[in-house]
Structures are given as C-alpha cells and as structure tokens.
Image (cartoon, rainbow, N blue to C red; front, side):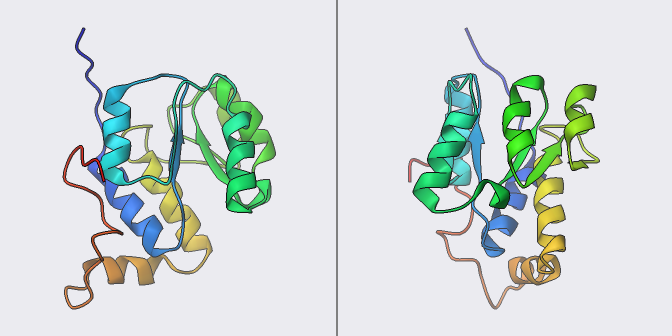
Length: 160
C-alpha cells in the first residue's frame, strides 16, 4: 500500500516563523504514518506523538516535561477527538474545514483548511497577538541575518 499525503509549504515556513518567535511546535495524531514522521523530521518539530487516541495524555506529558501550564498551550484541531485538549488549553484553534462542533468550541477558526495553510494561520495569529510577527518575518527574510540551520526546516526527510 502506498500512502500519499500533501503538506503545505506555507505551514512549513510557519514553523520557521514560530521558532523565531520562541514557540515550540508539534503533532499529536491518532494515526501512525511514516509520511507524517518524515514530515515531522523535516520540520524538526519539538513534539511528535503518533498513535494517540486520547490526546490529553501527550499534552499532560508536554506540560510536565516543558514546565508549562495548559493555559500556555495552543492546540489546533479539526474533529471531535481534539475536543478534550481544546477544552483545556489556553488557545483552542479549529481549522476552516473542521467539524462544526469543533469550530463552535474554538477560540479562533483559521481562514485556511487543514493541510492548506491552517497551521501558518494559527502561528501568525499567536505571533501577532504577542506583537512579534513583523519582527519574525523581517528576521526570516533578512539576508544579512540568516536563520541558523538549527532553526530552519530540513531538506526532506532529514533524520537530524
């Protein structure tokens, strides 16, 4: 069986913006997919949890390991499996094509669909609220101040 999954370059660039803004990013998914694992490695995500039917479990682990509170966590979801975390976190975001029930419980609904820039929408929303979006964008495009390789995304399936 061959798995095909699309990803947004806008979301990938958003991860770089998030790092410049001091944010950590990750994925919590019920599925187990090597394609998702490869994308996570490429983006050098801070957290990757696959095979998670109950998403509060990894959230509690992140809270404990990172020394943050639930109030400091933003969670982006699209279906009812995401509601337990969305109900507990500080910023609950639903993607544009989320189920209506999920949108109803979100603090913010992205203009773009999941996998089509919604992650970038959420990141820009947070960075703008923190007052650092423009600084992050300018830093990202400033040729004289390049992003260090550890901050930028990988080259496609990087293992490091």
